[in-house]
Length: 359
Image: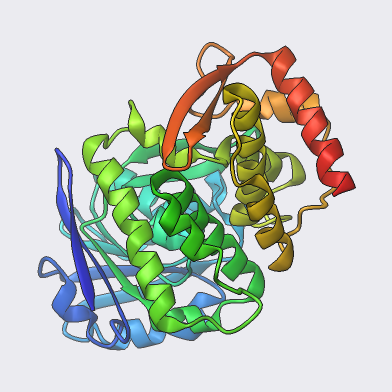
């Protein structure tokens, strides 16, 4: 078991990673609670919700609810339904919401916790690789049809309890999705970490020891940035490397048509390409492309039009005054924020789409 503490200006909370933590989850709760609502999706609920509830038998009231699996559930309708569940189960300001699932569940349940009675405690219990990123840092949100995560808040959990045995049930697409964020953490931190990740073969069963080590490193990268910039006014934007185009692809294709990480993978390739042009440098574009292709990432997608993508990129939360801001790399481990005007962005996007189709 590994534990690291996230220390921000507003809260300290532990991120605990290990095997079999669901069985011992009671010992990791930071407070005594009398009323708990477990929020999951309809896939994870069948696998783990009852086990989790049984290990909270010392708590007076433990209830479970779920939403349909998939990004489509990060909606205003599901958000309102969960608020109604909280009211029906008589949650009060001393109650707890547990987000059991992947990034979608964590974002949705966390936003419910942030706004119910002006904020109650919640705990992240991730069950995906992707959630090693989304569960840490305290950003919670739902989507709007015009853009991803446009409705949200900064609201940290009181703990993150990450039982890696749950990763064994992940489908291949979710493994790819999660590992894209591990790649991101390598690219924005240090080349050696990035090169370690490129040695992983996602077409074979994951090595538990390697997976835990790399997840820990990814969490440490994010923790280091979040502690310095909790509310994304400066360097926290670096964590959005690959997300400017990635979020636009997700939104234009329709949430759930491509996984978050698979869209971000394409976004990282584009960010590397733009970085090379912007700084006149060489970056590991080809190495990343080859790794993504070898691990069956969907790089040949039905591309939306460049103008539609640019419009969506302008809705990215980094962008200001309708000018797209992108996270670029001056070198591996040295990210920066750069404004890209529409004309240059369109040219680079068109060239990238054309090149990707010919590789």
